[in-house]
Length: 70
Image (cartoon, rainbow, N blue to C red; front, side, top):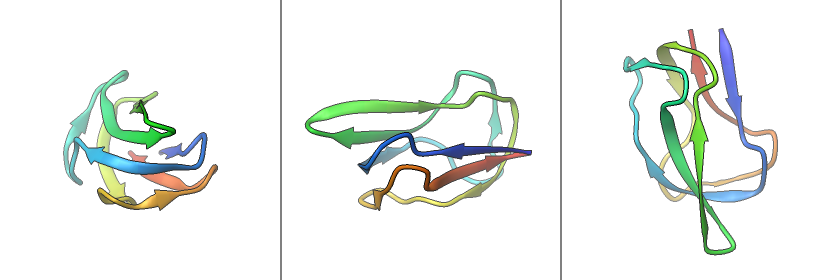
């Protein structure tokens, strides 16, 4: 099981996946926005997205759980 966590404080600008999706390594899961920059969050493992813990418009903190891939 792989956890995807935020590397910075940011707004969740766009969610590109949903629970149950098959994920490949390198897929973009969400796009964060911070200081007018768009930052893609990429999957580092492949598997099935079992939990998505963010929604568009959420403000997340460094270390917050974004998703779980199993």
